[in-house]
Image 1: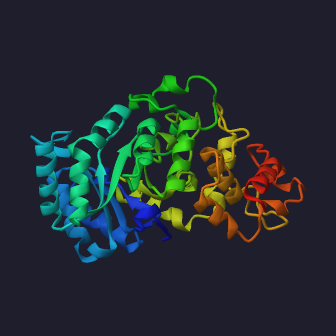
Image 2: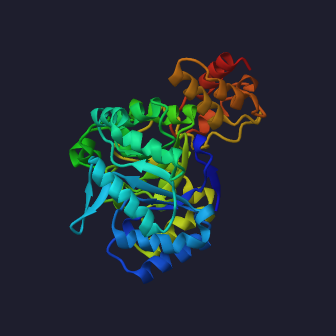
Length: 382
């Protein structure tokens, strides 16, 4: 298992984390088997969005022996009411649910207090200016929440949260089909057939800006819906008109700027094992670029996906990383100091490019790599 640092939170998380969808409507034996497999493979993080009390107790029992090394992302504003999950913004309900969750988990703290389901700019402003964020910050000060997070499907709402400087972690839906769609408060549009009826080209600019802002500002991303609810794995259901594999979906998500972990919502031991197998998959099995280039209804022409097909460079330049830093600078309209520092320690700089064109001939998306290297050398001065 490989691990990443989740932005400025400093939390070290496994690339593959657990979602909790599979634990709902299951029993203790199922939870024990899933956690035994996950912990044995080195998984050290989980997203616990469900307020189901049995699920919370099972998670608490499973991680008790590893609590200090296990990163638990759990949600505020989700409650269990009359045998059902319900989102709420009522402070009395939020406070009671948080106390109940800590008791069920048998833990004095959660690592990431995720403010649940913030899918409109107006709702984020309400949360930021009202008692919900104040309560989360109060719990952080008391040591009962270590980092503040926000979960969202809307890049416009998420961008406001990230830009506020108040959020350490963003949980966001990341996959190659959702990334084509503009921000909207109606999340149903992310998977609606009509959203993919015409020819689609390249990533939505708001989503690209969001990922790059998270990288620049040190907001770590935990990924939900990497498989689009399973649709991307099925050629008949996939909005792209073709199926991807589990390793391809995971690799795509991990290649986006600022991503720390993919929270896999496995519903069976077999599904979880397929996600964990990513860690031992060959580069060829993880490679999504060739599959993307063949999608019948989607084009990424001219858009760098950071997939690494441009390598190897005869001068040793890490073209994908240089391009990522270039895009961060473009998004900001200037060169952030952190980006400049990271660029400075690269073994080989863009200015070493000899314009041989080998990278462009290998790129499945026909990116103008030589021009990117020229611009990067000019912007970074080397």
